[in-house]
Length: 170
Image (cartoon, rainbow, N blue to C red; front, side, top):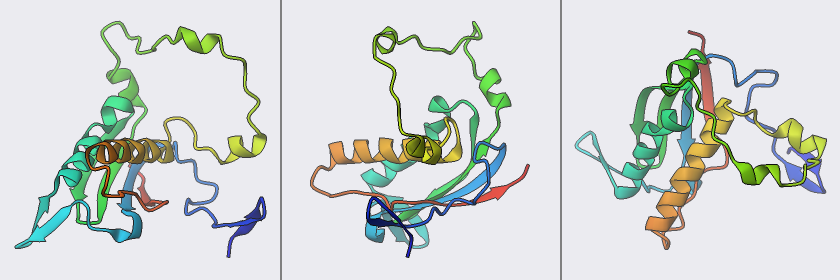
């Protein structure tokens, strides 16, 4: 059983303690659907036949480098109730993928008028760092969920809360 937080049990993180998930290298990722429901298609004669949901997930995966220019994609496969993929975190890609003017910053003037927040230290400590593998996975799962639920509102689509990873040094 995990530790208590606000009088509720909390399962310990599946992430490797002390590891910097912003470290460069290849990460083998597995993400399962909630309750391992078969949303993404079926295997027919040894080949995966994607459903529309599976195609949405595959499209979101291939779109990751457009949102995270420091990420390159390795092999990827969609299965009926999970995905496997390799994400390569390479900070040198960020410079290579910048626009012609070398500036990919987006100005958001409305944000400057907001009062500063004082997020509790606890939440800052457990939040993944910007651009880290957990941040990429959170964004990917969120994008998939949004698109699938908009397209299939009655299907009750969801992901398993966590993901499995294995790091490979380049």
